[in-house]
Length: 268
Image (cartoon, rainbow, N blue to C red; front, side):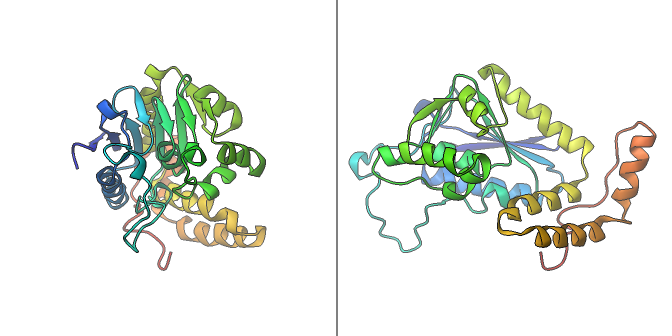
């Protein structure tokens, strides 16, 4: 898998680098498996507090690899297990914040995979696009769910149904990415956010809040309130609820002790 993605962990931050720069990190089956394995590793490792996904070289991911299949790239699947979302678990199921550092072009599945992340920072001049309908297929990786959640139905319909491309700066204006920066600053910007999360936020609290955020579209206000109350009861009175207040009062970095793996609510 190393030739398709590299994984490095330092200072409680995992950086997953899509690593086919000579092909603009065009997506392959092995790349999908490598990204899936990295997400599973991050979810299970309490030493990982946040995850960054980025691309080697000048692109994030230029879409599906059209070589060597050419016109047969999107041939009818022979395997009944075929899925339009080849990443398992997807980023939103990882119990740590996942940040897409879109350092360059993110086209097709390159962009739909970034939309599975919690936060996105893009290069201002990167070219982005859900171009699937211009290639005779349809947007993938849960994008008909993730994109409307991010920018609303009308804007999502425009981008998904036209397949037009746009810049990272325009993506920020649309609300598709959280911010746009010069290309050389994207990874550092993502590291700054990831490190802030790793130091200053309680791991279990973040994991529970993330789970609520991603499930909120299917919940009415009463259900959201029920879950918030349930999760509050799970964390209140525990060590981190005390430590967060004391660390703020004493003006020091917090020392968190609860973990998403060991202290996760039963049945969730």
